[in-house]
Image (cartoon, rainbow, N blue to C red; front, side, top):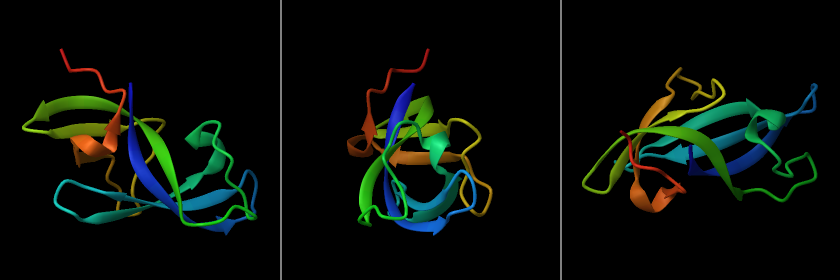
Length: 101
């Protein structure tokens, strides 16, 4: 499992368990917006009182790697607001990635 760099941009809802907006930038420089429940993002301290924007990391499976670009699938059913969960991410924005088999 790898993690992908994202930016928590704002708190969007106090509805249980709390929702945050994130942006993820792909290898082409396109920003993708994600709305997600805070617990899905792991042990990160995000709340309505957090200072935004804030760097954060999203778990993902590495599907492939080619010339410094990782194709990843976001874990825990995380997806962008337009329904995407697979992204091409530049190597500098992927941490602790293992090479696919």
